[in-house]
Image 1: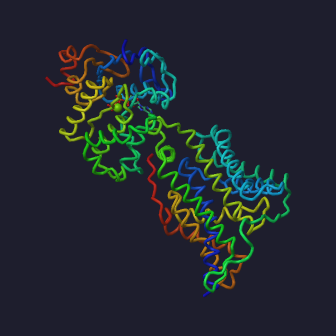
Image 2 (image 1 turned 90 degrees about the vertical axis):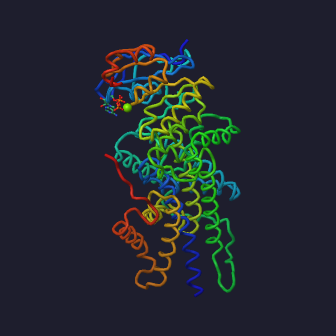
Image 3 (image 1 turned 60 degrees about the horizontal axis):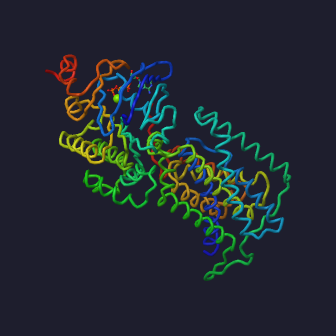
Length: 236
Length: 293
Ligand SMILES: Nc1ncnc2c1ncn2[C@@H]1O[C@H](COP(=O)(O)OP(=O)(O)OP(=O)(O)O)[C@@H](O)[C@H]1O
Ligand SMILES: [Mg+2]
């Protein structure tokens, strides 16, 4: 059974429908990527999974229906979301931001250890732990967003363009971390990423969205050979 | 010189009360962008509850803490029952609901307790304190102490507890807060509860000075607005400090500027609001807010 199974997902903003019944899955311990041009509906798809936009359809996490539930309840099941725009608490300190990431977990003892783990992954955050998060650079805030999500110790990680604005080295570091927690802790990942080549390398399954519909899908190895994807997104 | 020191201390005592009400206003404003015009009347109503308990023979401090508990739960319920349905409505709608609450609390208090002024006891001795050569009103010092204790409690709560952190988070970024699993609606309700609690303390500390009647807080609310404006509506600490400044300035001006006396004191508060708004709209400690459109 897949960790996340989505069927017939539709979502709208006001009167405008932007997802027209899409279907995809994240395997248990797998990485799935959603590709598509700007405005295709990638962000909306992630938002719909965790109840941030009004959506209809069948969303199952671990076999359990979660569509229609409140975001804060879905998060408690172990779904962490690195949102588009980073969602930093700009007036709080870096460390307070990270502590909030662990808010839905009730294991007080684990906090110090998990903070240390994040500072180990991102030494910059450790150096700036007392600093107001709004004063971090864009890239540092992106690291903070990833760190905040990891503090939940999630079972499923939703990543909306996690490498946006990051220097190539830092971006590579983020993908190394994602791969590591996916492999070592069997955390499922649903990845939206501008860099299609990287996304296809990381993922086992890929879905191509076009104006709210899945037009191509399959194992990433196959999609890498797909002519349309090669021409539009990989450039060879 | 003695008069000066006495006036400063009694200014700090009333200023602490203005500051507390200002803090209550700021707490709700930061979370919801709404100024709760009913804050003063909620405090007045809580004070009447304390008065009823004292009248029934309940010891002062028992009545004090029972009132705080009732005020806290009452504030929380008001948010859940009255404010929540209009949570996503335009700000003006919420303001009108708050003004409605103000009118209701005022008239219910008048109906239950009449509009006749009642004396309200102070838990502190009547005999003034002598420190050095100067006499201080025991209630002034006591009220200042109680106010500072409440503020210290709130500071520790918001600064060092996880729940306090979650409430601050919910106030500044509801969307991200939900993604952290925070129940934002309940955090707002808790904010109303704490604001009502702080208001109740202010009411019980000011009532021995101004006497208890249904309109007792209307003047105080204006001073609280002046304090919050001076300190900045976006800064809880600034609101408290603003209150202390307003209290001291009000007292000194009333004492030393002959033509102002006690009658024109309220005008001083209004003048301060105007001057701050003209010179530094974000207040002494507030941040200028940038509204994204
Ligand atoms: N809050 C909103 N209100 C109205 N329409 C919106 C809103 N957010 C997105 N849309 C519309 O929904 C469609 C899908 O947007 P979405 O953000 O999901 O795209 P995306 O694939 O994430 O694009 P990008 O690569 O630019 O991030 C777009 O046409 C967009 O204009
Ligand atoms: Mg997007």
